Amino acid sequence: MLRKILTRESVLQDCKIFRMLAAQNPLHGSFHTPGHKVSGWDITELSYSDNLSCPQGCIAEAERDITEILGSAKSFILTDGSTCGVLSILHAAKALGVRKIALCEVAHKSVFNGCRLLGITPLIYPQKKQGGIPCGYTFSELQQKFPSIFAEADGVFFTSPDYYGNVADLAAWRAYCDESGKLLLVDGAHGGHLHFDKELYAGAYADFWVDGVHKSLPALTQGAVVSAKTEVFAEKLRLALDVFRTTSPSYPIMASVEYAVKFPRNKSLEEQAAAFEKSCKRVYFGGDWTKLCAVFGEYSFAAARDAESAGIYPEFCDGNVVMFYLSPATTDADFQNLIAFLQEAFARYKITSNEEENGIHYVPAPHLFSESGETEWIELSQATGKICARMCGLFPPCTPLLYVGERIEKEKIELLNKADNRFGLRDGKIEVYKK
Ligand SMILES: Cc1ncc(COP(=O)(O)O)c(C=O)c1O
Image 1 (cartoon, rainbow, N blue to C red):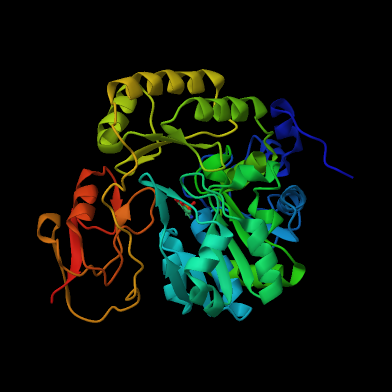
Image 2 (cartoon, rainbow, N blue to C red):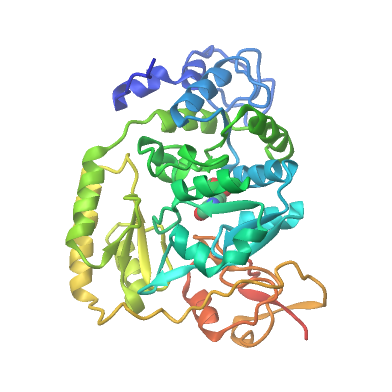
């Protein structure tokens, strides 16, 4: 029987972990962790609260519901972000024999770290860009341009949707993987909400996938779900989770993951976002309405600052695009405010052409794992021409701008210099090889 569609008002009544938390003894005296001793939602594994690592009570029930909604053989709640999910699906894939994965260069840093940790070789292909905006290659473009990568890989890994809303050609990749006996892994850190739309949803195609529900659904930060297509795969995932996840999972995060997965679709907002994208040439989202990318070119950092001054805080600015993250929980009033701001800002910051690349060239990293040689930390202003010794980039999107072994270009240093938040740097310095 199909699950009944929940309304916003009825979601909480259906949430098993929330109901357990709400039914706690009001006189609860805490002689257990956590040390703050405040009674409330932030508890530990007690007689009544079940146990994420081996659930039998309310968490098991919540995971059963989530599994049904996402259409997996088994879905696991995560309280340690999609990072934990990415590491776990790579671990599970390795246990199933995967040694080499085909991977786009702008995958999240957890994918590169997972490969390094697990001894999986990433066969990296570059990101396609149009008008300076990252966009995805189609299935046939990838097969034509990089045939040896796909012939050699025993697993294919996609980020879908990516931070710009691009959705991979997953139906075609599913057919390809079935034919060639390869595993299909999807990082859906930005796609939790797509379970409403099975055509776009990773879970309709992948063998293993991650849903980062805290990004595009109303879960607390770090809430995520990782899923497997079959029972056999789920067993591998269970082993991987034992390695990577915390033994002190947060109950508020767990409860919020269940709530977020059950949160209803917001068709009206989806339609408004689609209509705005259609009506405005400088707004773009791949196939995913929650990533509203506004193109400001050279004025992008200025526009992002203006937005903040107007009380509108974007997700990130990449030096060309300012990305505004929507979710089914975005209010109509906030959305209208955003549109009004963008219309006014587009008029103020006229850009002549967006046809050119914005000067940043991503290069696949042939020496990704070479870590030999002495390194030093130097000022960014001294780094042009040196060889990078630690991957670093803008935070978000947390995809490497510079890889280990890459010769550092001036344009990338300029971009790092402009960004408010970066990863891989220390006290504003960058690690490079000494010679
Ligand atoms: C594509 C992608 N994958 C994985 C992650 C990791 O997610 P989390 O921060 O929830 O660990 C992110 C975070 O930005 C991401 O953008």
